[in-house]
Amino acid sequence: AVVSTQSTGTFCQNLTVMLLLLALFALVPATHGCTVSAPTVHLTKSGASLTADDQVLVGEEIEITCTFTPTDDVPCDNKKLQIGAAAEADYSEPENHTMTDVATLILICTNGTSPQELVLTNVLCPDPTVDTVTAQLSYDETSKKIKLMCNAAEGCDKAKVNVQGTVEDSTSSNKSVGLDNPEMDKYGATFTSTATIDDLEDAGYEGSCKYGELEAKTATFCPKDPEINLGDGTVTATGMAFTVTCNFNNCEHTKFKEGNVEKSYNSSTGYVVANGVLTETEYTCVNGDDKMTTKKVGCLDGMTVLNNVGGVCETTLTPMICKKLDNGTYVKTCEEDTTNQDSQCRCPKSTPWYHEDEGECKEKCGAQGIFVSIVLVIAAALRFL
Image (cartoon, rainbow, N blue to C red; front, side, top):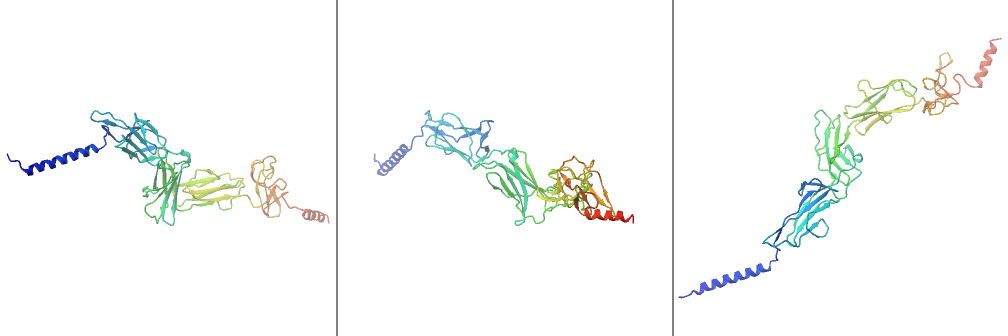
């Protein structure tokens, strides 16, 4: 039989290719007969599994599991686990790890040749102490935008602050105000309204800052200042009754204070002070958290707040007033209390009588001085002439 030279050449070429392929396969590193899966992670406390985007708190403990599957009946060796920036460590069983203050955590299971990783990207700072949380709502006149500032005294350097912010207007519709993505820092966030607001609602706005599982902290803002009136404008700290009235200019977030104490305010009757006051007292009408107007009920001109004995009436403890009648004579309003030492508006013990007509504290209730005494002596003598 005649053998074709062309067939013989083709066979030789195919054989050469097969030998080259076998040589290349021989150069591929052995996989030790083992496949590696990406790490699986569970919260140690609850057993809940975590994916890359799930939230995990600094301080929480996680359990990390690497899965190595032998192939071709060859056992897996060289099993390693790397947690974050730490060096690879031998792996034999699930590893517990307490989350630290990091922005992300990379977990790698490897057999030396086939690393598989899981990156936890949503590491959150734990909730701060509730008493340290503050919320502040304001309006920026330059940008024409509302700002909500959420802050706390405790935070993290790298992990994200777990805070959410919302703002609503205080009209009957309670319309939500759209907010941009916040500017974050280690303690909180600043939320800014997406749209400019040229015409603010008189009713005002309410903002809410919520850290994790904590109760939300709220802040309020109204665009207009309140107005205040004290009676007829001549009220003094002498025990006279008066009424404080506030004009809140349609703000829905209002407070009323007597001194530093918040009091209930009746919009129909105002705040009635039936027995007056005996010492300097401030009254404040408040719109939102930061707009307030204050007026003070003060002492009579020439009188000061003292806590020494004298200058007040027994029973009523009001200042001792000396009134001058139209005929030129003087009348006492009361007798002096000689024991009371309350801090209040009064004249000092040495000059306990307040002369209304002169606005001064004097020793006696009546005309004073040597000149007056001489005039009285002369007047008495003239009666006998």
